[in-house]
Length: 303
Image (cartoon, rainbow, N blue to C red):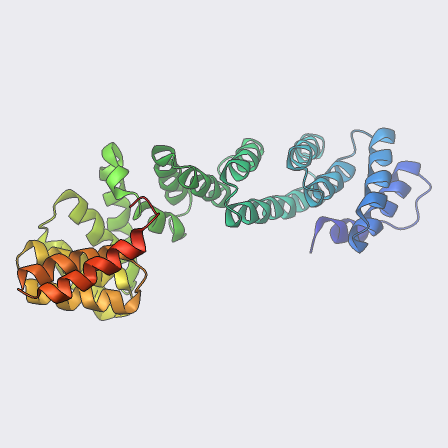
C-alpha cells in the first residue's frame, strides 16, 4: 500500500478546501496523473502548510517526480508537524521504504554519487535505519571510498546483524580493512557461530582469518566445512586453493582452483593462481592456457 492509498481511506466529503484538494490530489496520485496531483497537493499545502498529511503526500509525489531533495524536505515537515500521529507515522514508513527502493535503482544504474546524496539526506531524517545505512555503504563502495564503506557496513551489522549483505561487501574489501579488522573478525565470528549451517558465513570468516594470517589452520577447516555445506560457491574453492598453494600442496590446489573456474569461469584470479600451480606441477602448456585466460579476463579492467 502506498501513501496515496493509505490516505484515501481517511477522507469522505469534506467542505474544507485544503482537505478537498488533498483528496483530489491523492486520487490523481493513485491514478498516476502526477501533474494534476502536483497542482492539487501544492495548492493544499499553500492553504494548510502545517498539515502533515499534505506534506506526506507531497513527499511521495516528489519522489515519483525524481525530485528526492524536495521529497525528503516534505517528509521532514510531515514528521515535525505530525509527531505522535500514527497515520502520518505509517505514511512516512512507506515513504522511506520507497526512498530505499529509489536509491537501490540509482545503485543498479551505477549512479553512486546520486544514491549517496539521497541516502545521506534520508538518514538525516531517519537516523539509525539499517537498510538506509547499508545503501549508503554500497554507494560509498561504488565511489571507492572504502574506509567510509567499511564503517557503514559495520554500523549496519550493529543495527541489524541478520542482514547478510554487509558481511558480503566486507569480504570484498578486506585488503582495505586496516584498523577495522578486529571488529570485522568479531562480527564474522558472531555471524558464523549463530549460523553454523550457512556456508557463506563460514567462508567469509575463513577469508578474514586468512587476511590476518595466510597460513591459518582454522581458516582451512572453515573452508572445508563451507564446501561441505555448499559445493557450488566458487569463492570457497578459490580460497582453499590459494591456501593449499601456499602450503605447497600443488595437486590439491589445482583441484580446488579448477573447481573454482568451473563454477565461475569469468573470475580472473582462479586462473592466475591455477597458472602458477601448473608451473609448479611441471605442466607448462596448461599454465600458459590459464595465463592467457587470465589476461583476457583482466584486459581493460585495471586488475
